[in-house]
Length: 266
Image (cartoon, rainbow, N blue to C red; front, side, top):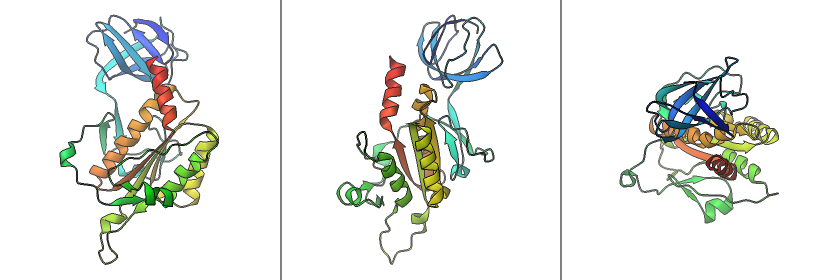
């Protein structure tokens, strides 16, 4: 289609689209041949609103062509993602080899039947006494950690990543699955200094081998910040359900994610 009627922030509005579908992936080709990807955010008759992951800078409404794929956004997942660093769109940025995908999963995930869940009795140890003693994290549970400007929330997140581990039931019982532990760490809206801090901290302390790191920088497109936590959680679900690992997911900073949502919804 070459029916772009307007560009508004990270959004592109198209007219005269036949049967557009919500959450459908769209490929945009710019006049200079550059290709970008987007997702249908809203549908109204033959009109479609597409959010562009790489930003809308340089898009010419008259010369940009759009191709609707008919598929939803899927991310490649593999156990080899542990020890690697990815950007907010799930592309490797550590100059390592391409990750060979074992599967392609929908980033929206699937609902889990609460009745099928095992009652949480075991905990994940963070190494921080205030959390482990007063607000311990049970397996399958999520907790928020609130902070404010000037407080070392990045250092706390890195410390949890360094020290986190599973608590064994008894010293007399050998459960080898307890050692099968992985961490998925996603940083959203961080600056270059903070991203470098996380990466160097994990590498220097030897915890990088069991960490899958997603870094969304402050100068990256806003719309990418919305899919970063979904990519992290999809990767964690694959490691937990398919690779049978115990997985801890750390997402920081959720306020950046909330601001990105507000910007897009506006």
